[in-house]
Structures are given as C-alpha cells and as structure tokens.
Image (cartoon, rainbow, N blue to C red):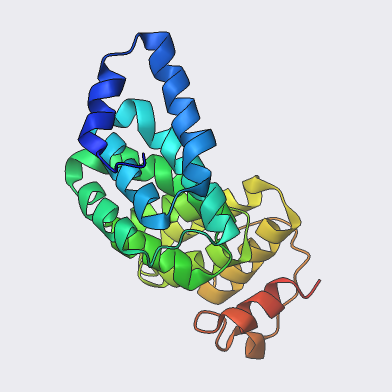
Length: 219
C-alpha cells in the first residue's frame, strides 16, 4: 500500500490460494483502507474492481460506504471520478447496481443521489425508479417524485410505483405513496392513507426538498 504500486498488489493477490485470497481481501478492505488517504482508497478500489469485479465490487463498496457516511470520502473526490468513468461502461452495469444499492440508503441529500446517478451513468428513469422505490428515506422519496415527473404520461408505471411504496410498509412509504397519489391524481389507487393533503400543499413539493420533507412528515 505504501508504495502505491497497484499492479504489484494484483500480482501478489493472484498468487494466493482461494482462502488466502479471501483473507487478503478482507484485510485490505477492513484493516488497511479505513485509514488510507482518499486518493489511495479510490485508486485501490479502481484497481481491484477493474481486475476482479466479482471478488471485490461488494467488498470495496461496503468499505467505501462506511467512509462516505463518516465524511472521509466524497463523491466529489477526483479518485471517485476516475472509478465512475470505469463503471459507466455498459459491461459494468451489474457492478453499478451493487454499488448503488449499497450506498443509496445512507444518502441523506437529494443532490448526492442525483450526483451518484449522473456519475455512474444511471440516466434511465425506469432504472432510477427501480433503485429509489426500495429505499426508505426522505431524500430517495424526493428524487423518486422528481423522476416520476418525467414519466407522468405513463400512468400504469405511476400506479405500480405507488403500490410498491405501499408494499414497503413503513409510515414514511405510506405518506410518500399518499403524496404521489395526490400529486399525480391517481384516484384508481385504493388503500387507506394517513396523510391528508390540501391542494395548496402540492406547490413546490417536487422542487423544494424542505417543502417535500415537511409535507411527508406532517403526521
């Protein structure tokens, strides 16, 4: 690690037995990288994910998640930009799916989620919706509502998404479903909702995260 020779690291790992390979991966992710410089962390992740994605994508993404939450890594880091460029290749879609699923639940600001999607090439609205509808946070719900605006002509999708939110079963997801039902006028969606909304409350819920959060949490 100190020599920053990532090719030598790959060469070393490739010479290990399967059991020692797994142990070395654990040591790198759990013992060495938590205290590494941000540039070194992203460089190691880039090297290992590019080389052996099946072995290292989830391990490295979990290590990155802890540091993103702690604030010792950010999506603004230049090293993440280099990694994101690798991951935008169509052949890396499975790796992107794994990373997004691991990181989204800890992202508390909608702009962070938008940046993650943009940098990893998650541009398709349907793909975004598939990620967001599973995450029980205000930030994900806000980005979901904004994303649904681009699909508001697709009424079956809107109805399915609201029902998926209801199936998630939390008080937050029921309120998000209630808001989406009212916002898009989905009278065909049944169910008992605890969130009672007035027409004036629809103003700015899809453009202002604070307004959205206040409306969704009002009961």
